[in-house]
Image (cartoon, rainbow, N blue to C red; front, side):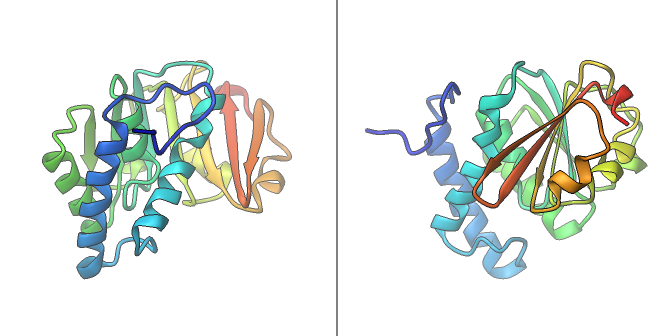
Length: 195
Protein backbone atom coordinates (compact mmCIF):
# COMPACT_ATOMS: atom_id res chain seq x y z
CA UNK A 1 0.00 0.00 0.00
CA UNK A 2 1.36 3.45 -0.97
CA UNK A 3 2.17 5.88 1.78
CA UNK A 4 -0.02 8.99 1.99
CA UNK A 5 2.75 11.24 3.20
CA UNK A 6 6.05 11.41 1.43
CA UNK A 7 8.50 14.26 1.88
CA UNK A 8 11.87 14.24 0.13
CA UNK A 9 14.63 13.11 2.47
CA UNK A 10 12.28 12.48 5.42
CA UNK A 11 11.94 8.98 6.84
CA UNK A 12 8.60 8.79 8.61
CA UNK A 13 7.87 5.86 10.95
CA UNK A 14 6.02 2.94 9.34
CA UNK A 15 3.10 3.60 11.73
CA UNK A 16 2.77 7.26 10.71
CA UNK A 17 -0.11 6.97 8.21
CA UNK A 18 -2.14 4.72 10.51
CA UNK A 19 -1.52 7.03 13.47
CA UNK A 20 -2.60 10.04 11.44
CA UNK A 21 -5.85 8.30 10.47
CA UNK A 22 -6.51 7.65 14.16
CA UNK A 23 -5.65 11.25 15.05
CA UNK A 24 -7.94 12.58 12.28
CA UNK A 25 -10.88 10.50 13.53
CA UNK A 26 -10.46 11.78 17.10
CA UNK A 27 -10.01 15.37 15.96
CA UNK A 28 -13.05 15.45 13.67
CA UNK A 29 -15.23 13.89 16.35
CA UNK A 30 -14.01 16.24 19.11
CA UNK A 31 -14.24 19.26 16.83
CA UNK A 32 -17.98 18.73 16.24
CA UNK A 33 -18.66 19.58 19.88
CA UNK A 34 -15.77 21.81 20.88
CA UNK A 35 -14.79 23.65 17.67
CA UNK A 36 -11.03 23.78 18.21
CA UNK A 37 -9.90 23.96 14.56
CA UNK A 38 -11.09 25.08 11.15
CA UNK A 39 -10.30 21.60 9.79
CA UNK A 40 -13.81 20.18 9.51
CA UNK A 41 -13.22 17.26 7.16
CA UNK A 42 -10.55 14.64 6.62
CA UNK A 43 -9.04 16.42 3.59
CA UNK A 44 -8.42 19.56 5.66
CA UNK A 45 -6.85 17.52 8.44
CA UNK A 46 -4.54 15.83 5.94
CA UNK A 47 -3.51 19.20 4.46
CA UNK A 48 -2.65 20.41 7.98
CA UNK A 49 -0.67 17.21 8.57
CA UNK A 50 1.33 17.75 5.39
CA UNK A 51 1.90 21.39 6.36
CA UNK A 52 3.19 20.21 9.76
CA UNK A 53 5.77 17.77 8.43
CA UNK A 54 6.83 19.65 5.27
CA UNK A 55 9.69 21.61 6.90
CA UNK A 56 11.30 18.44 8.27
CA UNK A 57 13.14 18.12 4.95
CA UNK A 58 15.08 21.30 5.83
CA UNK A 59 15.90 20.29 9.40
CA UNK A 60 19.57 19.32 9.50
CA UNK A 61 19.51 17.70 12.94
CA UNK A 62 17.50 15.01 14.70
CA UNK A 63 16.34 16.81 17.83
CA UNK A 64 15.75 14.88 21.04
CA UNK A 65 13.81 17.63 22.85
CA UNK A 66 11.27 20.20 21.66
CA UNK A 67 8.64 22.66 22.79
CA UNK A 68 5.66 23.95 20.84
CA UNK A 69 4.07 27.28 21.71
CA UNK A 70 0.30 27.57 21.31
CA UNK A 71 -0.35 23.98 20.28
CA UNK A 72 -4.06 24.36 19.54
CA UNK A 73 -5.44 21.21 17.90
CA UNK A 74 -1.97 19.67 17.60
CA UNK A 75 -0.64 21.26 14.42
CA UNK A 76 2.29 21.04 14.08
CA UNK A 77 3.43 19.59 17.43
CA UNK A 78 1.38 16.38 17.74
CA UNK A 79 2.07 15.58 14.12
CA UNK A 80 5.79 16.18 14.60
CA UNK A 81 5.71 13.98 17.72
CA UNK A 82 4.24 11.18 15.59
CA UNK A 83 6.85 11.82 12.87
CA UNK A 84 9.74 11.94 15.36
CA UNK A 85 8.97 9.47 18.17
CA UNK A 86 12.54 9.73 19.47
CA UNK A 87 12.01 13.43 20.30
CA UNK A 88 10.36 14.50 23.58
CA UNK A 89 7.81 17.26 22.98
CA UNK A 90 6.31 19.65 25.53
CA UNK A 91 3.17 21.34 24.20
CA UNK A 92 2.02 24.68 25.65
CA UNK A 93 -1.70 25.38 25.20
CA UNK A 94 -3.44 27.66 27.73
CA UNK A 95 -6.99 27.26 26.32
CA UNK A 96 -8.67 24.49 28.31
CA UNK A 97 -10.77 22.86 25.56
CA UNK A 98 -7.75 22.64 23.26
CA UNK A 99 -5.50 21.37 26.04
CA UNK A 100 -8.17 18.76 26.92
CA UNK A 101 -8.06 17.51 23.34
CA UNK A 102 -4.26 17.26 23.44
CA UNK A 103 -4.45 15.31 26.73
CA UNK A 104 -7.05 12.97 25.22
CA UNK A 105 -4.89 12.28 22.15
CA UNK A 106 -1.81 11.69 24.31
CA UNK A 107 -3.78 9.15 26.37
CA UNK A 108 -5.70 7.45 23.55
CA UNK A 109 -2.61 7.10 21.36
CA UNK A 110 -0.19 6.32 24.22
CA UNK A 111 2.20 9.09 23.20
CA UNK A 112 5.00 8.66 25.72
CA UNK A 113 7.07 11.38 24.02
CA UNK A 114 4.45 14.11 24.60
CA UNK A 115 3.84 16.28 27.66
CA UNK A 116 1.11 18.93 27.77
CA UNK A 117 1.12 22.12 29.81
CA UNK A 118 -2.18 23.98 30.17
CA UNK A 119 -0.45 27.32 30.52
CA UNK A 120 1.45 29.92 28.57
CA UNK A 121 5.09 29.11 27.86
CA UNK A 122 6.26 32.19 29.77
CA UNK A 123 4.51 30.87 32.92
CA UNK A 124 6.69 27.76 33.05
CA UNK A 125 10.25 27.25 34.28
CA UNK A 126 12.34 27.17 31.11
CA UNK A 127 14.66 24.36 30.13
CA UNK A 128 16.86 24.37 27.04
CA UNK A 129 15.56 22.27 24.14
CA UNK A 130 16.90 21.49 20.68
CA UNK A 131 13.78 22.49 18.71
CA UNK A 132 11.13 25.18 19.21
CA UNK A 133 8.04 25.26 16.98
CA UNK A 134 4.97 27.44 16.71
CA UNK A 135 2.26 28.04 14.15
CA UNK A 136 0.42 31.34 13.76
CA UNK A 137 0.77 32.46 17.39
CA UNK A 138 2.59 35.80 17.26
CA UNK A 139 5.17 37.76 15.34
CA UNK A 140 8.69 36.45 15.12
CA UNK A 141 10.30 38.83 17.63
CA UNK A 142 7.58 37.97 20.18
CA UNK A 143 8.17 34.23 19.70
CA UNK A 144 11.90 34.67 20.31
CA UNK A 145 11.16 36.71 23.44
CA UNK A 146 8.65 34.14 24.78
CA UNK A 147 11.19 31.36 24.18
CA UNK A 148 13.94 32.96 26.27
CA UNK A 149 15.48 30.36 28.54
CA UNK A 150 14.39 27.49 26.27
CA UNK A 151 17.18 27.97 23.74
CA UNK A 152 20.93 28.04 23.48
CA UNK A 153 23.25 28.39 20.47
CA UNK A 154 22.33 24.87 19.25
CA UNK A 155 18.52 25.30 19.31
CA UNK A 156 16.59 25.62 16.05
CA UNK A 157 13.26 27.45 15.89
CA UNK A 158 10.73 26.67 13.15
CA UNK A 159 7.89 29.16 12.81
CA UNK A 160 4.96 28.35 10.54
CA UNK A 161 4.07 31.75 9.12
CA UNK A 162 1.93 33.51 6.55
CA UNK A 163 2.54 36.44 4.23
CA UNK A 164 4.30 38.65 6.83
CA UNK A 165 7.16 36.20 7.38
CA UNK A 166 9.69 38.01 5.23
CA UNK A 167 8.86 41.40 6.72
CA UNK A 168 9.07 40.04 10.29
CA UNK A 169 12.44 38.41 9.71
CA UNK A 170 14.07 41.21 7.70
CA UNK A 171 16.04 42.64 10.64
CA UNK A 172 17.07 39.27 12.10
CA UNK A 173 20.27 37.29 11.55
CA UNK A 174 20.57 33.52 11.22
CA UNK A 175 17.19 33.15 9.47
CA UNK A 176 16.28 30.94 6.50
CA UNK A 177 12.91 31.19 4.76
CA UNK A 178 11.24 28.29 2.91
CA UNK A 179 7.90 28.50 1.11
CA UNK A 180 5.10 26.19 0.05
CA UNK A 181 2.04 27.80 -1.51
CA UNK A 182 0.83 30.43 1.01
CA UNK A 183 2.83 28.97 3.91
CA UNK A 184 6.23 30.34 4.88
CA UNK A 185 8.53 28.41 7.19
CA UNK A 186 11.09 30.45 9.14
CA UNK A 187 14.12 28.55 10.42
CA UNK A 188 16.06 30.49 13.01
CA UNK A 189 19.41 29.26 14.32
CA UNK A 190 21.74 30.61 16.99
CA UNK A 191 18.85 32.35 18.76
CA UNK A 192 21.21 33.94 21.27
CA UNK A 193 22.62 36.09 18.46
CA UNK A 194 19.60 36.56 16.23
CA UNK A 195 18.91 40.29 16.43
